Image (cartoon, rainbow, N blue to C red; front, side, top):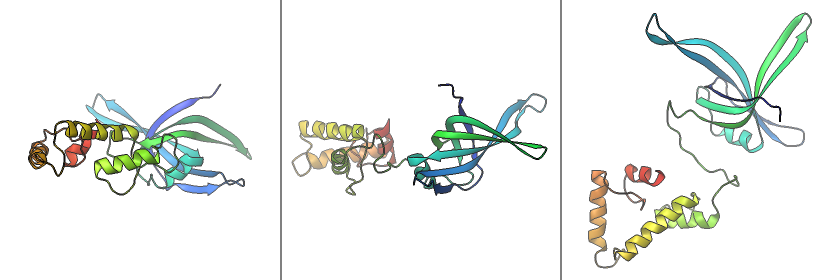
Length: 205
């Protein structure tokens, strides 16, 4: 396919606008400002160069997800097909640069972001995996989690059963105390989902 694929890093310059085509297909767009950064050898520091202004257009599920994910000013990475439109207004020639987006995400070199599965999204874990993950991880709210996390929790539970550290049985209380000490010192493996924030990070590694 003779398409020009690009990846652009920049900031969301406008609020995301949403609409639907006559056939009911969701679409969203926003303006993206991508500013060049270069090193000034004379001043011995990084400085801003020219800013490129592009219109980002998304369709279907990506368009819907953009509404609840992006805000004006957010740093983002956009990948998709580059399109350059040209037209004339009298003797004036106009040009508009667009990206038909395939993927959009936050630029994590400049901050953090929390991911949430969209209902019915491709790769979304099954309800069974979500239930298992919720039970094993103590979620209790029925929110689906990726299958590999549920598998890790199940393996942790099986390991605990094998060692005899089962809640409500002899040895469980001492095992829980030891796990709490590990969490406090930052040495626990954190797969059980019962510890501090460090535990959650260990699950995702």
